[in-house]
Image (cartoon, rainbow, N blue to C red):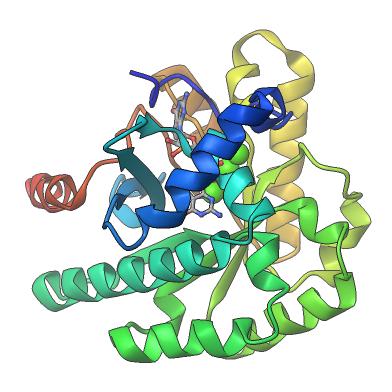
Amino acid sequence: AKEEGKGTYVVYDKSMHTPFNERMNIEKHLRSAMNNNEFELHYQPQVDIKTGLISGFEALIRWNSPVLGFVSPLSFIKIAEDSRLIIYIGEWVLREACSFMRSIHDRTGLLHKISVNISIIQLLQEDFVEMVLESLEDSGLEPSCLELEITESIFMESFENTVSKLEFLKSRGIRIALDDFGTGYSSLSYLQHLPISTLKMDKIFIDSLADDAYSQTFVQTIIVLGHKMGLEVVAEGVEDVSQLAFLNESDCDKVQGYLVSKPVPQRGVWELLEHQNFY
Ligand code: C2E
Ligand code: CA
Ligand code: CA
Ligand code: CA
């Protein structure tokens, strides 16, 4: 399926390679997708490397268009950003993810976290902070159970403004993760000016662990540095046990990837949580 195998390690933007009329066509259908309930969230577990237990999930959007079929977020998120539709789509994602996580808390009594991808376009909205607080309040989810995933692209747009919004949200107990870490333009010294709680090491480094001494050193250095700064370190795109073993020896906190599970729909989340109760 188109869904699989398009790793996060695609550093360039896939939509740059989407021809103009295809972009127009996607944008046209995106406009009605929201009202027609064509979006769904899938959830990928994050596992605590020491205990082997699920600590939370990342929400990932899925779009099944009756006309276009399944469209990968790698193709439509950029188009949703350029057309500003991401403001509405992103709010729907946040609300849906928070209320689903609240229903898990109610049923399991365990405080799993939910990580939600946030576009820079959303962050630049004047009412972004209010929108997040309202989504939390309406869902009844604990602020400490919500993590917002941002990328290094925030370095390119009104940095002060976005950082102060993130600082405020963090002061309310919401967690902030720096996604795709290592692939962007930021220098390490910027890290200390960002109100983040979590570093997500990009899949590209995990992929090359097996045959690249540089990646091994990079990963180990990031883990040590992250811990020195009081951050949690998550490895993305973990696909095999040798990667897991290396990350465990290197004292990484959490892993996410096909080795544990692909992103699954709501029903799959319940199954994963049930299965986990067996050990
Ligand atoms: P991301 O935030 O880096 O998400 C991780 C991507 O890697 C997901 O792709 C996930 O399915 C995939 N992945 C996870 N583990 C593995 C693995 O072990 N191997 C491989 N090959 N892939 C793995 P997905 O769901 O196609 O999403 C792609 C990107 O689209 C995301 O990258 C994120 O940047 C964006 N995206 C997805 N959902 C949303 C959303 O709700 N809002 C926004 N703004 N962006 C989203
Ligand atoms: Ca990515
Ligand atoms: Ca992410
Ligand atoms: Ca990522």
